[in-house]
Length: 211
Ligand SMILES: [Zn+2]
Image 1 (cartoon, rainbow, N blue to C red):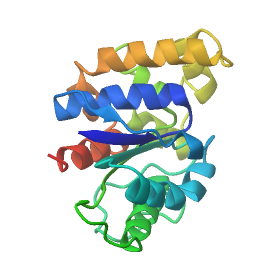
Image 2: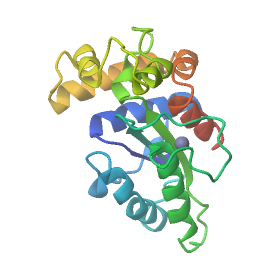
Image 3: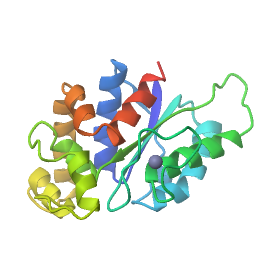
Image 4: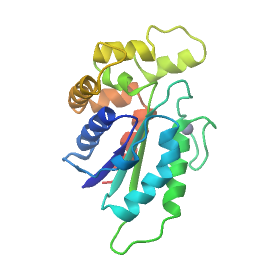
């Protein structure tokens, strides 16, 4: 299966591809959307319509997986009726709607099935996923508490330090740590979806629906 991955850095994209392969159960082939690589939120949201269009018309990608960090935006609410944003600031809902609307506007191409989509929200950043299995205190429930004013013992910065040994790692150091973490998580999907039921759980469900 050919897929494209859209995230905030090439290191994260390498890790997400490993997670997608683990969910699907075989190795996918990466289709590059690198000419349109965003650098972070909100560029991901802004560039997503062009990326979806380019993938539809100019590649043979069958699926696109998009993952962004939530930063200080809300954690997606799971019991949300389809087609309704759970919160106007929810990045998962914003990305889903953006992708859905973009793909509604493309014209059919002969012999081309519509692009399958998967959206994930790493709460508060993908480094929290990378810490899964190593630090049980890092999870969506705890971060949701922080958003409503509770004190917790980690931050986006401390997660980076824990994962990379620095809050400003080189791209090489970031990629090495991200790939190593994703290879470990590939054998620990259950725990990742238990600790991150919304942002990773939705991603997992989307990818499983591709099969
Ligand atoms: Zn939402």
